[in-house]
Image (cartoon, rainbow, N blue to C red):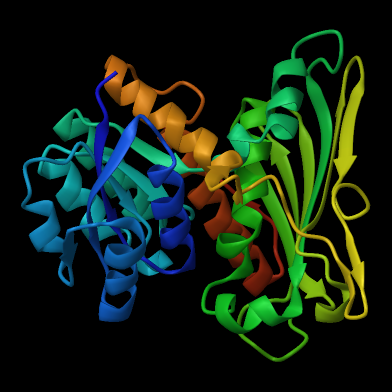
Length: 338
């Protein structure tokens, strides 16, 4: 199998995770990276042997030896590098949220259609075996058609200092929005959302959203940045999907690995991205492996959908609007673009 030649734009915390995960893949070779920080570029060169390092994304995108670009910039800066990468003939993985404006998400989708290149949203929970197993059971006698869904996503309080830069629906709830759309197999018809700010920040630390889908499925999503730092729990998530035939559920905070020490309890997440024997493991690696395989085979991805991602941003926008107005928001019944 030929290796996918990769460029990464953005080397913040998650961009460095991309670099680490790609570097663990036999199917990929990171050829070039870009970031505004010379220090992070030096780390990429020193620790991962990346020779081609850029402070300007346009210079990286001028290269003709790249197959795939990972766009891992700050949320509001996804549109420009994504569209330019597509127009330069490269496939693109754009991290979540793909945009914080529905118009920008649709512009990316149009650019992909014009270029004929793959545009893949970074919805990596579709590659988590637990969430994927629920999807596989939907439509079978194990679960059947989803009737009701509940999804909770909780993170430590200190993280809010960084992620209050964007509404909680885009930073945290966007994962569950994608899962809900994936599981329901339908568009959202209406939204009613409630947000509460504890610190006085513009973004709410606590967010609830009630969704009604066109096919009748109901979903309640709950995201918060309220886990006490001293609790030592990186991820405290839960899900329940009730179908016509059965129910699926799991909860993360009381299962898995725990460390007890004089500093207290620490429960690290081992499912998204970590290392084992010097190799990246987790959902991020599985996602990148899948994308590289699609590129090598000339196949369109069927596990992820940019049309779903666009609709997710439309729903996220409606959730933010409902929070601000205190009203139900009815979404357009127009079918998603292909």
